[in-house]
Image (cartoon, rainbow over all chains, first blue to last red; front, side):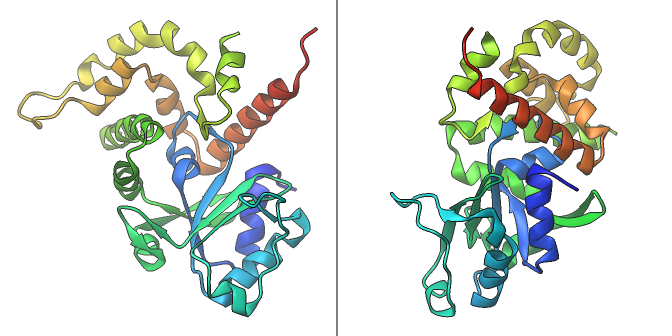
Length: 161
Length: 93
């Protein structure tokens, strides 16, 4: 049985959630050596997909991380339509669900800029290395600039292989 | 000690846990990557590998990660994260 991040990602895949791994963990998948404490995904924010996401992680006690009382995740068809991002905490790790990514665009654009990788016999969509660098450049926070250095070095090392 | 100091900065999302090993490798990495420096005709920009080394990133770990499968990278990340969590929760004795 998988544990940790892998377990959470497998739940999403098996639950039929349409998503792409983005952010710091996408860097880890590409080979970065840093450690990140959460998973960021960009996903289809249609009610059907968000309800599948809710179902997939329902036994991990998901809550809205940014609310003062960590309100339980209770999405309905109606409330889904009002959402742009979801900042959740689960028993495994925080899970940020974003409808678009700076420097790339909406979910369809992010999906176009993604690639499929296999981990523990599970196929995962992850933002491509080039797109991740573009996204990090668009964010341009200090931690993004440090990640860009690693990601650009990885790109160069991959070219040399 | 260095590790615990870095973990103290838990407000940042990404923690370079293995940064403690950086300095020891800097010289070796510089030697190892000399041949990777681009000629000036490659581009007007600095070599990204050299830029990472100069910043203090342990490029040898990136190389090792590239030799691993995505599944292995995720597994090793989980081990590092679990270890960091244990250290964060540890009590001083």
